[in-house]
Length: 255
Picture 1 (cartoon, rainbow, N blue to C red):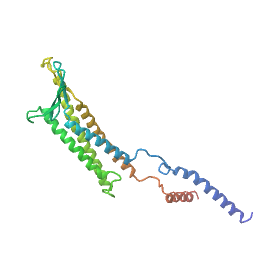
Picture 2: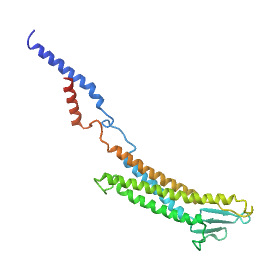
Picture 3: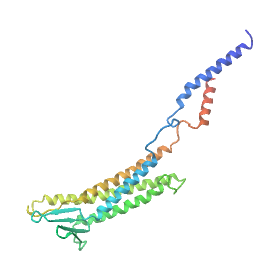
């Protein structure tokens, strides 16, 4: 046996094993982060969706606060007249003169449910507007608080909490007024011929606005969780330099 043949065969066998083994082992290093993928639901899109839903709920609650269509009443004795009542006005619609509204004379003379509803709806509008102002610096792409991810995260959390408060303070007065109308409608103490208040269009818009504010606040928290997940360090290095270093380590380990 020539002295030079063994080393050449050994080197050839060594190079062949080095080329084959790492190829099978390094294939498992290709993770979902290295593969091209299409992401439809991103943190930025979730934040924009939360802002859109919260803004829609805020506008709906604001309109509901001043609409005079919380209650409606139509008398069987006089079908050409319809009465409407809200938190601030009482309106009468007649075919001859159209609709005429009059503000309540005294706050103290209002029923307790309307007084509480005024306060809660005002709190709802204020907290909803404040929620949008607070989350604005925390949105991705807004050049405010750049380089301070913790502060941006806190802005989103506080905005979500304020949106929840706004939604609850919208649902509470609408539900209380609806419950009061149901109790009075089925009260056997009133004569059957006496007209009674029924649900108006503003009641349903108030429920919709309150639910939209709750959903918007929840979406802010979802966006925060998605941002925390995106900022986590990957378990497998995805850079080309780190991948080549891992391959060299595997070759050294095989040898």
